[in-house]
Image (tube, rainbow, N blue to C red; front, side, top):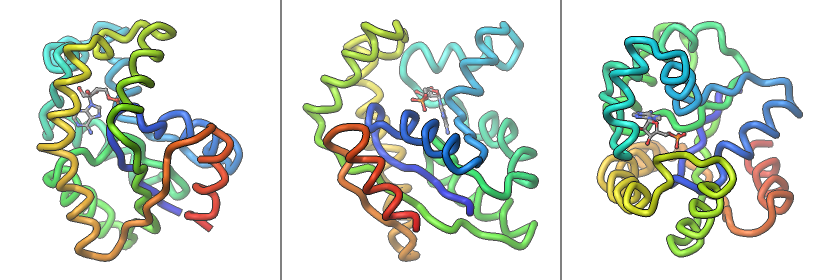
Length: 183
Ligand code: AMP
């Protein structure tokens, strides 16, 4: 199964992807985690990405696509979390998968309300101290999401590939809905 998790920042994609991949023995591919790892190691890519990341901007498509591309080929059971985030990335993902003769099995859209999101991101900042969870950066990331990533949901909807879940509620509630959605 190749599954994409889509939804705004703070919708719980990362938390659910971590739990579900552990439970199912899937690979968890998170471009956000890969970028944080590059930044922590101070690599050239990490230093470049940081100039976008810290402001809550998207890292350029080419960089992200190059980073994830070679991992797709041998990822048979995988949850993609935080990728694709632009229509260019979504089209490139379709291309890469078609080269190996496969396609996505599910695209799950996490539906949440914005007030709830801001609340969640503020709590996450208290716990994890992520610079991109500062109030200014949160607002900016929401705008970026609406401008760049919301069209990705439409891209998949056009092809009838989206399963929508209500992502409000406890982690266990959401997990239950998610399992139903991907079964
Ligand atoms: P996340 O951990 O998924 O919330 O991602 C945190 C940050 O990493 C984003 O605000 C972007 O700066 C960067 N990022 C993660 N995934 C992508 C992506 N697919 N395309 C561009 N930038 C990304």
